[in-house]
Length: 322
Image 1: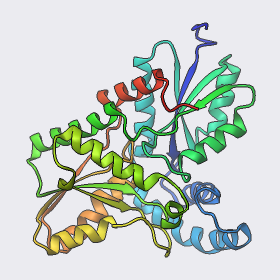
Image 2 (image 1 turned 60 degrees about the horizontal axis):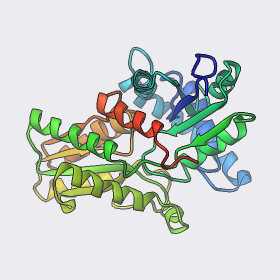
Image 3 (image 1 turned 90 degrees about the vertical axis):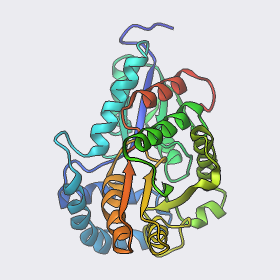
Image 4 (image 1 turned 120 degrees about the horizontal axis):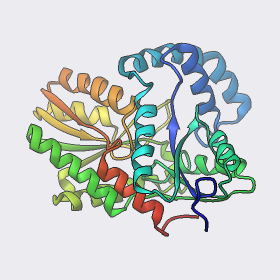
């Protein structure tokens, strides 16, 4: 197989996506695309679309835009900035591949990126969704977008990497570095993004993979599994989601006399609204209001060297690709 610049195989790192700007119109366009995905919201369209466009988007977009404005970086949203940097770091470790990034929602879209690679002469592509744990709401949605845009490309998609030793070791090392710099909190809480409980009841493996990841991180950290708390954040709507929920758990810890909690979000490859605003701002405030003293958020792996090493090794491997 040729490895010239125009025909080298490609690796596409795919993240969820982000608004183009911290404004209500930009957030509305982004949320409209995200929440139109049937993998994300499975209600019938005749019921969901009027609710989305006439109630949810008008009310939610300005509020979410305000949250984005609090964390926006000079180069864009944290998710966009860190995902681009991560792709660059992985590319430095894979000189025989074209390494680029795409977003499932927003830009650069999966279709835009695959079209560009095709135009450059690329024919073999591996797509690595930046979701360690598989869910029909995330990884399967990326696979849907790839299937529509792949055309004549030979494409493989990584199913998950929730037990990858390099990834788990990277998470553990980030926790150790935090403890070395700031001391160890009274509790270590692993907060994963939630999904509706009914999806897990219907066979989605996400919850089991989160638990397996917690066990792998505990082993890499050389602590017992029961020394880690596993919770789920970012609940949307009124139906039951995976439990226990992160914020009520933190509030209960504070009421029980716990004063310092360390929080890491292993399901997020890079920092984003859900980590920097929801955890480090909203949940920190809730913990302190309930009587806690310090919620110490441990940043995502972002473009760190160990993270890039782990993803590059996954890209070179043969396990989990289909």
